[in-house]
Length: 225
Image 1 (cartoon, rainbow, N blue to C red):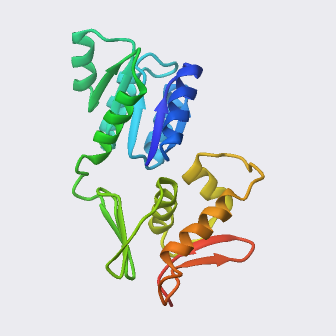
Image 2 (image 1 turned 120 degrees about the horizontal axis):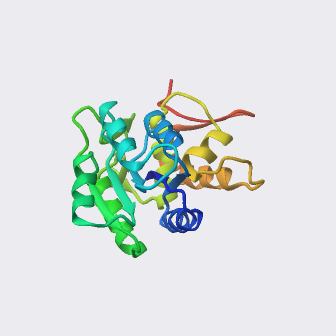
């Protein structure tokens, strides 16, 4: 799952991003409203978590702008502004849930997961298919030729990213960004090792390979040509 956290408190942002990362999710952290709105409208996220009191564009205005632009991504307000009227105002602005600081990370995680499980809009895909490979994004189930495939959370995210870009080549840098939320080269083989594990589960037990290495460029997932 990929999330956007718009939060100007560095400690809170680091705490939430680290916790979500430990659960196998990717969390982009943005510290001001204008930049947060830009990312919300430009990138595809499963859930967006927003503080109300953020610089350049407050959380209420940000969510209203998102909804006016037709963005239906689930939004959770995470804020110290916790009066009943404040909560009503946040929900009426277009948010889907409201959590008041201080908070327990376990509750935040449960609420985020609940929002991610909500049925998407009618035009959003919930199942990805390439040849005989099938990924159910709601139930988080993977199968090939009808046989279930057990993936770890990060492997599932990696496969989802590759399938959404079916037929296109994704570079190592692009995968680091989209799967791990890393915007620099960490100097490790994390991408290569995860690709290897994914290939051993998705390709090796079957006749036709779907995951292809494009030498010196990156990786692509597509049906045999």
